[in-house]
Image (cartoon, rainbow, N blue to C red; front, side, top):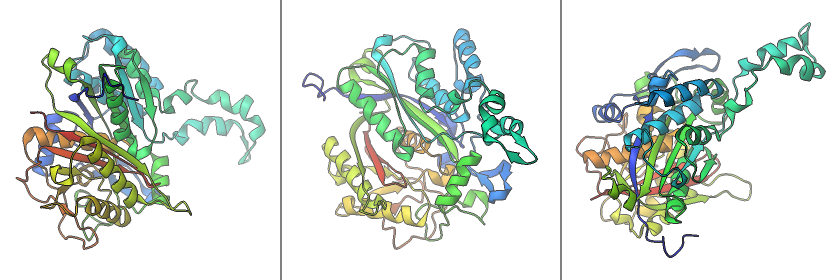
Length: 438
């Protein structure tokens, strides 16, 4: 519950951190968007057996300490030492969060650690099969695996800290340790819906008076080999086109999702805290909503869930659909998901005086799992800051089953607010609404 004392406490965004196929720096990221440069390209190590040759890899991210932005030397040493215990997803998330703290002006402390916390979203983190190779070999004779030998001969061959690499609370835990953040800490594992839910919880924590500053973020990948197998088995994957033209959200000729990887983080704090230190304010978090819907046979109803989440976010923001400047869409690029999302937007915003502009970042990056929602929200904030929307790449032929106003040219106004939409294949939807700071 939010107490009466803090019910009107305003929460603003003061720091941004990105790891994406379009780079790590927010200015380079924005330039790629307005110039229409895709981050989807041939993979350095294509997965030939799965017919995956391109994707949105975060190519500038080499998992080194230089990816974390400017840091004091002692913190560099501390983080560098801990990287060996983290998988790539956790390292991406931690790097984006450190970059967000630096962007907010908190790169080297300067806060009451008891009043600063973390809420971080993750995807399902999958282990690398190669980590088990030595242990399996030790238990195998004449091509027959003997499970009874695993605890004695096999398990000892694993890297001693292998399990820690894949725990979904590692980004929040390590960020808290490295920056002495002693406030509320949580990890949310709701796949694609995770970031909006993390930002919602971070905002509510500040409004409840339990913290003054929070880091909210999310990290994910669809390029891990085990994740690729899962995606290929359960989703329609684009193929057969030039890499940069393969991601086509809402287009009639879309062929499926493109796999990518990335992470994003924001620093949110009370307006009093931000104004007291003269911080740059990117926007104000004003609305949030979530919903999970399936039928009696457990089939996901993503259209209903998305509409519910968007309506709830508008309600908490005390806004009408006509007040909404634009929508940062989930824009997965599959036939079914794009239709569901379009119908949800039409159900909520169909009576507007003019169609709400809709743009889809995945046309540039591919699907970054849980990281997508975070990077998409940052793209929306940069659209407000630069007073223009970036066009959706590869949108050429409207689909009659997707009755939405997709942004396809430069010069479209972002308005003064936007809704960030996310949904999982299981019908879990989340939405956050952010307003321009004036």
